[in-house]
Image 1 (spheres, rainbow, N blue to C red):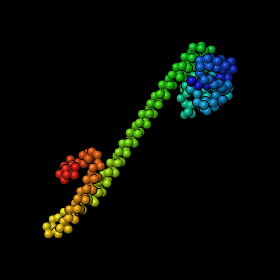
Image 2: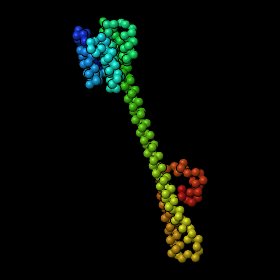
Image 3: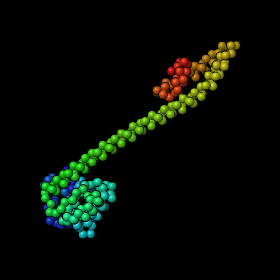
Image 4: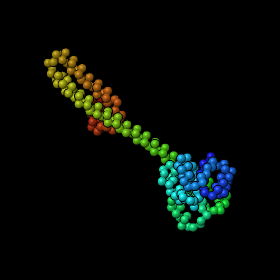
Length: 230
């Protein structure tokens, strides 16, 4: 049920609007002046506001200007009621952000039609806003996931470089020892174990890298294949 706020200083007009809209099953609240109407709107956020233009102390234009400056009430559909048909007055209201302008005395069908139109447009706007918010949230999630993937790959590459730098000296030592044909069996066995350990460390790390071909140049991939590491 849509909640409508009526801001009208004339008792007869205010009560007539209350009866008319309640008969149409709207949830209707009224305020007898601009100050009370503005205060209630900011506290309760109605779905639509019907407001008289000419009121003492705080007039309709001032009410609308205050509400449009508040982010929580800035988009509430706003319909002016006025006994004046002055085009300058109408343009001023529209410039402040009024959605419609009805001249007193208004017809029942005219008022109900204006209300229905503004509420329908507001619903479409809110649906589009909700859809945009969902799309933004989904995009943020995708960006976050992508960033996490990039961070993980960067970390893995860093680990790979560190372990590779650590393994190369071991391999060089082992190869140097193996070149010594006079090495005793114990030294030979130690060299083989050292090579196997270095190989196992590199293979374990490489097995964690996804799409390794995208991270390495073609020549590097071919070299790893020749060494039977990929």
